[in-house]
Structure formats: C-alpha cells, structure tokens
Image (cartoon, rainbow, N blue to C red; front, top):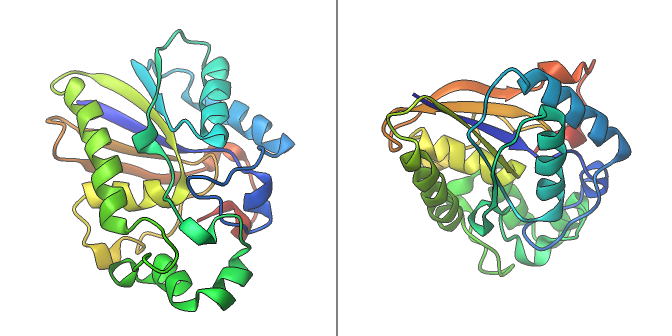
Length: 220
C-alpha cells in the first residue's frame, strides 16, 4: 500500500492579508510558520518517507525543505511544475474583497461552484485543466510505487490540493468543495494500491499545530 501525504505550505504574508497568490504571485512565510512546520516535522518523524515531491513555487519549496530538515531523514526531493497552484490570472495579487467587487461571478464560482467557474475573463486556469495537470502528475508518482509499501510526501498549495485530491477520490466537479478547505501546514493522506484508485485516510489534519480556535485566513 502506498501512502501519499499531502501537505499545504506554511502560512504566508498574503494568506494573512486574504490576498490571492496563485501560480505566479508569492509572498514570504510568516515567522510563526517555521515553528508550525517544525511541529509537523515532529509529528511525521516516525514515518519513513521514500521521496518528497514539491511545487517549485517558493512558499511550497521552502516549506518542503524546512520540513525535510525537521524530519532528519535523507530523502530525495523532486520539484515538479505540475504541482504548482492554480493559475489565477488577473486575480493574483488582489485582495479577496477586491476580487469579489471586480470579478464577482469568478470569485463566487471559484469558491462555491467549481462546475460554473469560467476563468476566460481573468486569463486563468479552469478546474478541469488543473485536475488534468496535477492529477496526472500524482498518478505518475503513485504508479512508481504501486504494489509497494511506501510513504510519499507531496508539498503543494491549498486550492490546487483541495481540487485534485477530491477529484482523485471520484468527487464530481460540482461537489469538490463539500469537504471544506485545507489549512496551512495541514496534512491529508490518501492510500493507493494500484496508483489509479485512491482512498481517503485523513483530511486536513492540523491536530499537531496545537491551535485553539479557528482563523479564517488559515484555510482556503
């Protein structure tokens, strides 16, 4: 059985500001995010990982290497462009409230109605395009370790992970958001034996972060 551990990157300055980052926008991790990555590393330390795959975007890349340092394991790392966040086009760098005013339909559909999301106006990437790009990469990764007992770590982005994980589980496009969002430095685990069929083991686990109360800027 192959276990895929999906980690959303640590919280950034733009996350705190409720600003879209996407595939081309980026901002530094908050100082406290390094402490949270350390907590995640301690939580995962007893698990022996075969490989780490990460988005090359800095916030995810830094999270992956910081996590690897805390795991204290010698593990090969591969940066894959297919694991990058949604291309959000003109929404990137904008505050959520400003996007809601300028692109109200795109804002609502992206958050609440994936089957209605048409990014043509904002020059962005659709849900099917993201799922094809990222889902194909994850299936390729899983196929390498099919029929083996392996643990694989994948560090990526909230909106992209939310969409692709649910798609891998066979969730229809209209219901991709039904489970809710993924928090910064959260862990979601899928199992697969074939590299094609996936089962959900754990969704959006943040128990190790020792947080009390929810901060809406933590989750997308």
